[in-house]
Length: 220
Image (cartoon, rainbow, N blue to C red):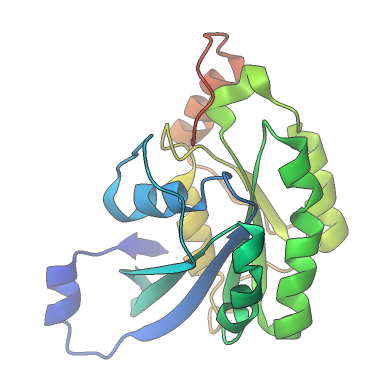
């Protein structure tokens, strides 16, 4: 069981939290930053500036009655910053590899990002592939089945989400927290470790997939 806690509650806790490093990987414009900001502040900024280098944010959670703090490292997807990324993958517990469902090219690079994480961390990192921007279903270039198949082949977890609409963001992070080292129920490295969605999140996902309203491309 994973629950989010306020900073006030976190600061009042007498128990030192266990800290876990989570690194976000993926091409430019897949909206890694937007996923993090939706989780942190439940906000979405369509005019955000692309990450320059590396950004860092953190959030406290209670996982199985244990206070933990997720340290979220947001990496830039531009080619000129790729030389910085290996040093931030080091010592990470989790890698979140993101792609844009409206961009086949970003999906084609997912395996390279996963390989980068494993080459540096070996079996000491758990990985979730996230297909972002499902609110733009009518512009989809990568189908859900393709994402699931790749995740199965790589032996990692998979989920689709929308930072813009707030779909499956909490589900993503609750699954992450439940699969952190020390939580023996975690199976995130295996192909059966998919995110289990709450009913209302499934319904919202289905509604967005069926929607035919035209939207302008943007960071979602």
